[in-house]
Image 1: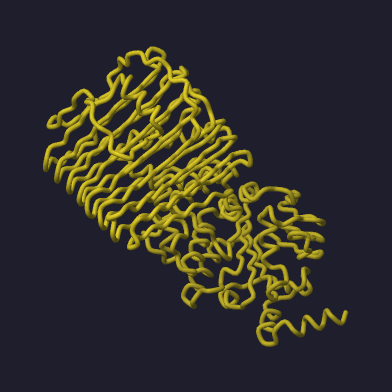
Image 2: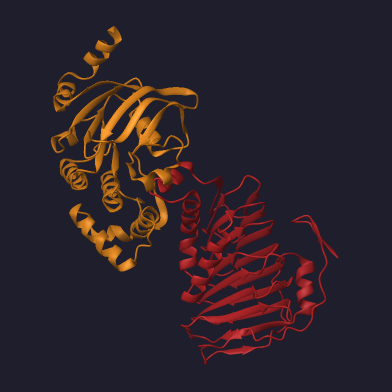
Length: 345
Length: 251
């Protein structure tokens, strides 16, 4: 049993049985890439993910995962779809995913965690991205596990010169969910972007932490988060912009905007700005608030019920991020999921 | 003999415990155009917001009847469904929702019939052409980055799509140039017929050059103090509100 301080609870890791489902969706997968068993490799120094206990648990117990190696100058147009589906027979996913993208190449990977039964599922995983010089890596992570499940997800990227990593994170499910994204912008003019949405309803507890660690000169980062909390959901958001020695003229931005739909929700936002260099630019903005009463009135004056007006504003705030997911089917499913959660407003 | 569309009797309204409307009476029949004029701070916008049902405006006395039904406590969406429309003085910006999607949702809500995409798009295009609005506005986020004039036109577009029985225009003419006022006035005229009525709230006279009001009311210090025809508006235009203010101060 570990004490998980961040959310103030004790947690016992379950035994990890085999995971027997296929998780690489081979419909339309490109043939010119190779996908292997996950390999052991070292974690970057200073990377903690959700915490050592979580990382060790993965290293000792992983039951699924892959290594994807994209060769130099290979631009893969179709997104690669990975689905970790949990049900009564396969309630536990401990995955280790390694994505290596060589110089001048490009790839998009969609990783989807979902339950298809009421079983209490458990996910603890890590995704590591190595983006070499001048590469573009798009990683889309979707978490939509059922309301009794636990989700723990650690993500890390190391970005070399002029490389670019775009994270998109969609957090819709689980009773307890921890998500960490750490991006090391090591190379000169490397770029890291993170766009995320989260939806907290019921009694969900969420621990969200994002770090952009600037080491390369002129590196650029941006964090753009839109959230909604309703019922008695709780959320802690930590967004760190960390400018290390050598990150001259680096720029980082972060913004979190959360809409609180009920008085009993709890929302903490803790932006952090750390500088070892003078010549950097870091901005952060966070706002949390009830829906603007005048906006609500405006929409209702056009015939929308209060519920529909709220839904419209929430969907509108999510839309740019949902629309950037490169799959019609997934976008539709996510929209339906958001809609479903509004059924009991 | 004409049945009243809207009848307001002794309406008193507070905002945060301050009384703004102090016993206002007003009747609007089917197919009539009414103008309410008055100096700033007299309660014009309060009347508009109260009629539409803004929760911040508290009705402490009196009654508002629409088609003989008491609507004092109805929420804005229910009033909209009954056929009341407010063109806002300061329309809200809603990023992430396009004009077309929004209006299709609104029209579906008000009519209770899901609007199909293709026919609705055609309707929208027609109405936009009449208002001399560029087609691209349909795909822009609602009011986001619109100029003052574009926002007002967009309000009139919404009105022409939703086809209310009573359109309340709150300072729709302010901030518009001559051409835009003409276009807006034509939009209002197209809506106006023997059943649909219009209530124009203004402290200018600009729209009056284009619309032929049946009644002109002066709203001063929370009450309608004088009612007349177009000549009253012309008098105000010449002499301002001071005469009327004195007239009522003396009473």
